[in-house]
Length: 130
Image (cartoon, rainbow, N blue to C red):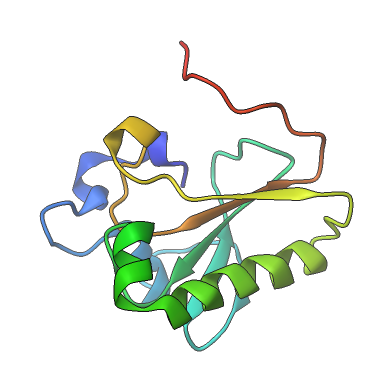
């Protein structure tokens, strides 16, 4: 699910269960492409690139800063999973791994996750415009 498309009741900024926790528990369907003991990777339902996969740690942390401070090894697992998925998806020409942290960065689902983007030439970073 794209962060901008997440509905308020799935963001879980209030401490309740997130959409991602429901996917991990197999309570709702997702196109899961890879899974380890500590991570799960599934296709974004509103992709922003030819390949757009979310890599989510199974243990919930609010954002990447919180994850890095609390469990650097799990953060390394997320990055390793992103690399493995990029390989499996044939992204040898390049890919991007992005963590949105905080409202100004566009984070609306408060369960840390990496966006793996690729499969085409990606544009530069910049301001959000409507």
